[in-house]
Image (tube, rainbow, N blue to C red):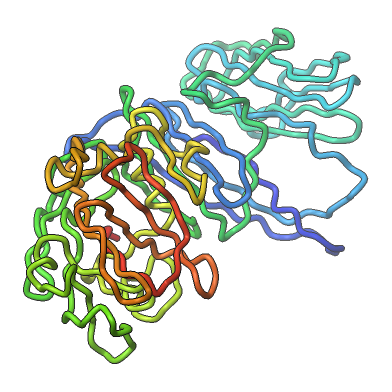
Length: 441
């Protein structure tokens, strides 16, 4: 089934003539390990521009239309017909309309051939209004509303209706049109420009699973709802003469251990682009790298590229997680703040409720700071290498790089400490040496 949303790509400046229309189909499905599960709903967030929308089962396909239009600074774009629910229609459907100022609103419903089926006209106050549409014959209709020279349309899917009548259209009043889903407020709009980073969140039976993406072409996304198991089809990875276990945390497949790749150098020596992967070990003891993994400066870990999501020193088919991918992990394991919650966007501080406790191992942390390791991530406190060459805090802190740079000298990381139940998001100097976890592509 398809839910279609018109996303207007506003082009600044004067554009002569009509521009072409492009579409991207995003299809969603879900599994628990290898068994298919039915999604309750899917939330799609634009992490670049803001805005979100929600698909409710059986809607499982979002078609994004983005088109170039003339920009008229004096014309408001607030008047809008929002996606109806449910869609496809099983009996009747509710169509929300937002009116910026009191005025006459004309509504027409046409069939796929453009023939007029129903029409209505009434004066509506400023605010949100709802209409109940019951389809007649045919498999789809187009609902168009006009106000002060502006128009907005949606397509309504209603397969299997053969009533022989033209259907009905009723005004049901001014009301909040958005169905409840977690703590999501009204969906006002969903802007999209190619290159925007989106976040897809699938919901099933009280659980949620997230996937970040920057869509460019039609694609199918499969949410995974299994967790605390080896990644299906890939329980281990052999790399650099070592075997790493894997762990599935909903839609993310991680290495279960910190990366321990390369040759050890003394903590007082700067890692360099010399064709050899170099690592620091706590206390300059290679045995500690076997326990905690290596510590790496950001540039060495990235193999001297600045492209977020790069493979870096990870195995082929794996990459250094981005800042957004760390946020998805945190939301997946926290018992209070879910995936996509603004809590995870807080910087330079600890955030969340118990994500740190749930990610920490049940052993190895100082001062009774062991965690619950509820999801099998098994975060160990490997310490840090400071810019003066000293290596400290094993057993106390674990800090992991992301592949997302902040500027020429800083990059985002995550800090889990023995005394904190939550997780700190910080931007640190790239010359520090931190642990690395790899995420499957």
